[in-house]
Figure 1 (cartoon, rainbow, N blue to C red):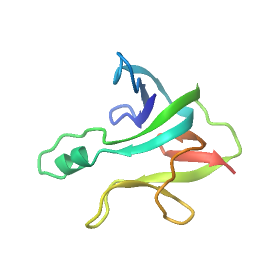
Figure 2 (spheres, rainbow, N blue to C red):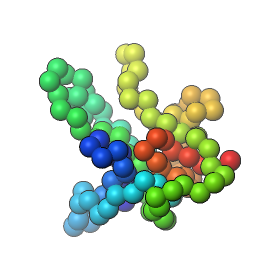
Figure 3 (cartoon, helix red, strand yellow):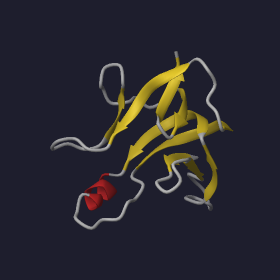
Figure 4 (cartoon, rainbow, N blue to C red):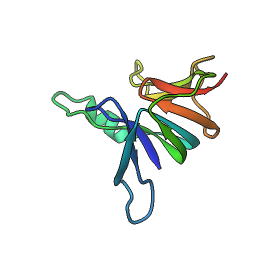
Length: 120
């Protein structure tokens, strides 16, 4: 499954990540517990969006196994990973809030519209 922040609703959209229904939206949630397979950033879409008059598009998402969806996030989690949409002369990327390094794939996290949280 793929998880991204819906630009219209502010919620998370969940889409099928593989098979015959690849890309088909299967639901919305305010919080998703996911076993992360990979953090994705489409460089092609990001480049297209940097041009004048470009329309908003999703170009960053998290893929993996959805373990749970919820309207609230459980206690005991803290922000760990965020997305940096623009860098001076660089590319957008997911990064670790502790030290600014690029986010590593794997692990189980809560994804919310405000960021990615892990157990404290």
